[in-house]
Image (cartoon, rainbow, N blue to C red; front, top):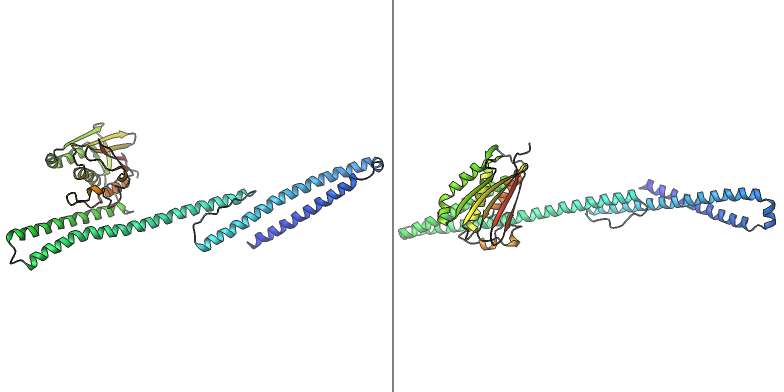
Length: 361
């Protein structure tokens, strides 16, 4: 910084010198022009040479002035930038430098880089704040979802414990059965939390194998045959081509489809069919889980893959759910280098998965 100030001082001295020289040249030129015509005619050749030299000096000094002015503006902009960056560093802030550096393209490039760093820093900080907020929300949701069945379990078992002798066999059986159901709810929540945490781990590994999507679909549909019959829902599958070989973690991928099919049974009220389709597109495969049940509200489509998010109409005791099913789906598909999205209207609700046929090493 001190050296830069010294350079600025030197440039100012040079600039002042050039300006003074130009003024003297202009004064001398004016003096030459005002000489009487008779004297000019007697000394014509000498004066022409002098005037030519003066013109050259005049142009040279003008160029020096312009050059020094530009240098002065550049150095001034650089000093201003250094001061701003020192201030930003001392404040540990991510604010932008909101001024331009005319005649100083290199300084302007530094300003642009500094602003880009500030924007990236601001984005990282916002993501960190959002992550912290999300973690706090997750802990709150976990606490609530665990406390509700746990309170019921303690309550019903407490009734059995305190009133064991006076309870009828019917009431005893009812209380124990309710406590058992609530225990299973807690078990599902804990299992979903464990699975979700595995999808979020940076060092999570996939047990990759080559599998046939058509065979996987057939196994899944067979496992849901009884439930589909009870709900009067037709289960279908379609692959194009018939044989699609996919490299993936078969257990995790099966979990994806189980979650999506279960989701369709729980929340696709009024559905008459659930259809699994797969189509090869270049090096990718597009997989869809389709049902014609109750539509998902438009405003919920962008949030349904967030952890613990539930569509408001699904928050009831009959559907239950941990709110982690679709978050697990998203996590597993992301692990496989794919993406998942959803669309829904009055006719169809479609969950679309796009993932590579072969995993990158």
